[in-house]
Amino acid sequence: MAPAAPRAAPRAPRAPRPLGAARLLLLLLLLLGPAGRRAAGAPVVAELRCQCLQTLQGIHLRNIQNVQVTPSGPHCARTEVVATLKDGREVCLNPEAPLVKRMIQKMLSKASQPELERMQQPTA
Image 1 (cartoon, rainbow, N blue to C red):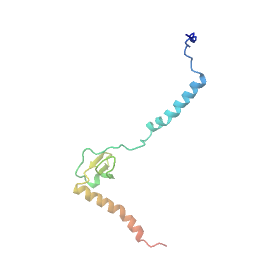
Image 2 (cartoon, rainbow, N blue to C red):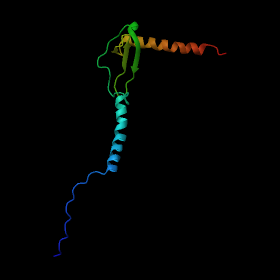
Image 3 (cartoon, rainbow, N blue to C red):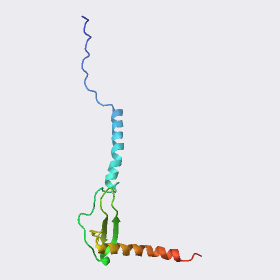
């Protein structure tokens, strides 16, 4: 039988080297820096779910300041119509309601009217 090799005495854990700690701190700052800025600012990606849980069948045009129509897509299986009222509230409208369909048609025709007028004016 061969003599057993002498065992090395267990070493006590070393304190981290100052240079290694500085590198680790720098790495953490680089990794966490962009995440902190993203959290404070606007979201990078819009929420991937439907926004309208309940809808109204219609609302009078004079109460509406802005309308946003979001077509169906991977975020939501149905078209969503969100109206911002003059008092700042946002309400969801039923895109299948006849009143809402007429309202959207009217808004689209008003939006395209200045474009048609520009196209018909003679150029100098």
